Length: 171
Image (tube, rainbow, N blue to C red):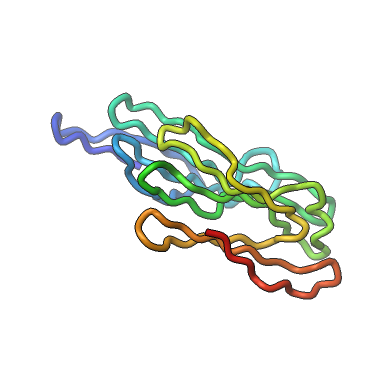
């Protein structure tokens, strides 16, 4: 990602890396919020698959707001992922949820883990968890913007016998 300084007519690197992609969340004041996605992070589970970051345009400083964890589950791999973040007038709202992959991946692998909805300031300070959910009960989480300064979260999943639960909406 590059920064263009129109006052000095210069270009500089904001963030970079190999084998990664960026998802832009947007600007809030002097802070640019984005996620770094590392699709190959789960191969060995030793570093975060996704990192939520904020770049302060005044100072040039990058702050890591949150990042995911990876955990091996034998023939399965469980991992957490910041699936979406949105900017509202008073902060960043984002989801961080555990999911699993692998041939024998069952929701029981998620026992003891939680899905979370978090709010923080655009500079990464003041983070607080707004809501938590049992990861074994809710394996899917989606976010969408509503009216101005409004966001909706949708949760869903399967019970232990594989029957799909109805989606639940939270505002």
